[in-house]
Length: 369
Image 1 (tube, rainbow, N blue to C red):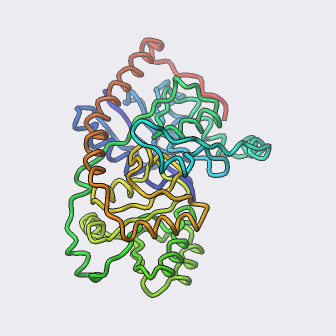
Image 2 (image 1 turned 60 degrees about the vertical axis):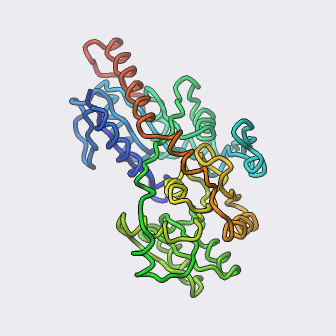
Image 3 (image 1 turned 60 degrees about the horizontal axis):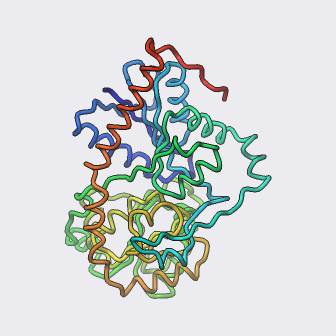
């Protein structure tokens, strides 16, 4: 079995975890004996692959999806999809009540006429529709993403599988010393993620100013330059901006931090949260996305559209202790070994069905864009 993997996201959209998630899948699939190639920018031919797995919805993944459709190659899509304008998300109050048996309530922002007009006119939405309609199987990161995919693209329940992203123990391995030696010994709030309006770093800057908390922002600053300038202009004297850190120093930053905060509009599930949990930090997390499916009620959730909610979560978190059982919960329930076993079985099943239906691998007729 040989599988080609491709990732992509639209500028300003996507989780920005697409590449990292793809590379983790590649690593553990190879360890399971699957022949895996990560595809480059200029993909011309997919004939040597039994299956193609796409991560994210973008021009890049759309182009690969169309090539696969012409060649009759089965595609699995991990879209990491979120409708920011009309989300389906967990109710914040019920997240704090939820436990292992009681599930949080779901709230839906109903689609409007504007959404359907946009869907008909947007090339981007047509590309997304093509990818999802031509996928043999769609893998989501959690319940709310699944509900939005079913609603927005009319994907039948049987074509969506909720498969958790695995947890790599090494994300939590590091020492605080190197970071403290370079940046100081003060206790601080850590936020890791590209500087972006979706990540709400500007709100963290305001809140940490009011609470007199040092803030370290680690993340690329090459996206929305106007937003980057805005954050730097409003920053107080205890804010440190760090564009890039190598993996060892990034792990050291997590280990040196007092707590972690990322009040994003959504995360699926948020690899930065996973790393913070493995480093045993108190966490402020968004209530929107699939984070709850991984971290449960072991972290402090906030409404990313309500600065008072974010303030309360940060205020509570700055003096809190981490949940002592969260790290072990992640390692026990979200191992890459378990995820990979399930994924390989899905690959084998899809390939078998496809070859039985297309014994001569004749090209499948692609839907019109």
